[in-house]
Length: 384
Image (cartoon, rainbow, N blue to C red; front, side, top):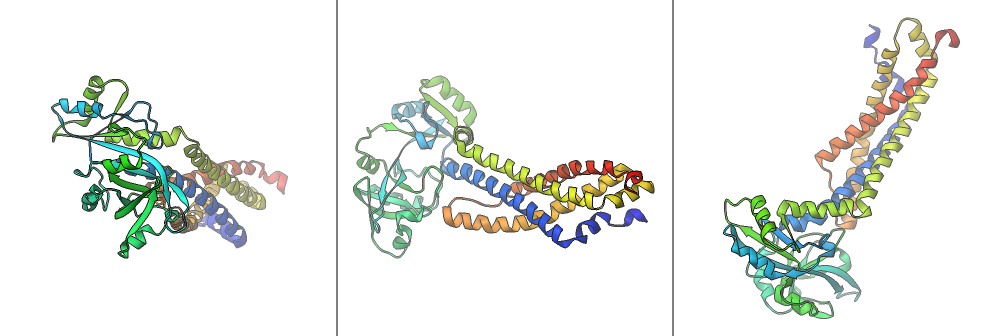
C-alpha cells in the first residue's frame, strides 16, 4: 500500500511558496528558451520568404554572392544561355538592390530592398503582385510591401483610403500604385517591386543586363536536380547554379553560420537550459536536505536507493510539466508583442513546443539526478 502513496506530490505541495518559486523559475527558463528559439526561427524564416515565393525551379547567382544581403551582379547572357537546354521552358532576370526611401510624412530616410522584374510575367507567389503587374509598366510606379515597418510612413493605410501616395526613392519621385505582402526581415525592413525599366531609372548607376538573380522554369516532368547539374557543367564557373530548395538552404546557412545572430540565439537557448537546471537543482537539493531524516527512515525500513531516486525523478517530472504550462502561456503573449513591435514572423510551432518540453524534462531529470546524490548521506545510524 505504501507504494500507492503519492509521496512525490505530497512533498512538492507541502510548502506552497517553495513550489510556486520553483515553477516560476522553470517557467522563466522555458520562456528564455522559447524566445531565443522563436527569434532564431523568425530570422531564418523571414530571410527565406522571398526565396520560397519564387515561381521557378532553378536559380542562378554570381558565385561570389553570399546572400540576398550582399548579391553580386552577373551578365544575363549566362541566364539566356540556359535556354539552349531542351528541358528549360523560360528564364526570368531579377534585379535587386538596397536604396533609401524618404518618409513622405516625416522626411526621414530609411533603406529598403527594391526588386526589378519583367512585368509581363509574375515570378513572385505573393499576395498583391499578380493583379498589380500592369501598373508597374508605367514610368516611376512601384508596388509597396504592406508589411514594411511603420518608419516608412502610413503608406498602406493611405493607399487603402484611396489617396494618391507618392514618395522619394533614391531622390526620385515615385508613385505607389499597389500593395503586396512579403514582410520585414533581418536583412530588409521594407520592400518595393517595380519593373526592370523603372529599376534602372532608379539605379542609374547600374548597367542594363547585369542582373542579380536568374530564375529558370523547367518544362513539365523535368528533374530540377538533374537539370541543375547539367547547367553546372554547361555554364562558366562564375555562376552558382542552385535548385530552389538549395537557394533557400543557401540563404539560411548564411544567417546560421556566417553571421553572429544565429549563434547568439542558439547560445541564449543553451543559457536558458543551464539557468533552469540550476534552479531545479537548488529546489530539489533543498527538498532532499529538509527531508533527509524521512529518507533515512525509509532506508531503515527497507526501501532502496533506487526507490528514493524514483521519488526525486517523479518530483522533477512534476516540476517540469507544471512549470512548462505557464511558461508556454506567457511565451504566446510575448510572441504577440514581438510580432507587433518588429513585424517579424515570431510564431509558436508544434515542433518548437515539443522541443522545449523535452528540454524541460531533460533539464529537470538532470537536476534531480545530481540532487539525489545527497541521499547517499541519509544513513539512519548517523542521523538517529
